[in-house]
Length: 153
Image (cartoon, rainbow, N blue to C red; front, side, top):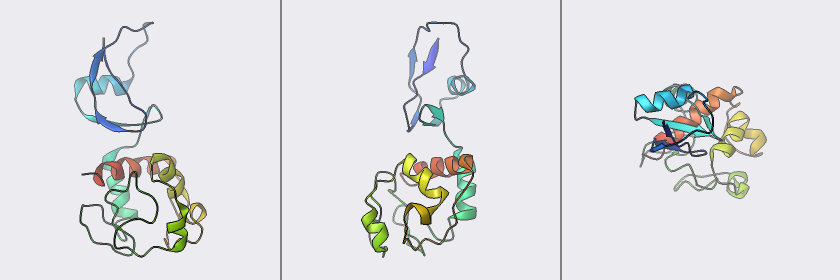
C-alpha cells in the first residue's frame, strides 16, 4: 500500500512512500483522502488538526477586527500576524507591545497558541489584548491551522 507519512505538528503536501504494514489495519479516512487528493493536511501531535477554511471564518469573526495576516499588512489595535509561527512574543516590527508581552519570552508554536487562545489574559498577565479567548478546542485548532497557512504565505 501507499501511505502518506505524517509529520508531527506541520502542514505539508503528502509525500507518498510504499509501506508494508505489519498487520491488516484499514487506512484512516485521512489517509484515504490524501491518497485520492494530493492535498495539504495539517497534523498536530500525530492527529489531523483543524480545518483551514473553518479557521478563516473564525479569524474573520473573532480576530480580523484587530489583526491582519498578509505580508506587509498594517497593524491595527493588535499587530500584523505575518510570520507569527516561530516568532517570540512581542517581536512584530513597529508594534507597541506591553512589557508583559515583550518579557514573556515564549516562541509561538501550535502548542503555545492552543494554550494562549483559550485565555490570553491568563497566559500573558498584563497583556493589552482585550479578548476573552476561544474555549472550544476544535475551534482553536481550526484557527491555528488557518494562521499557520495565512501567516506564512
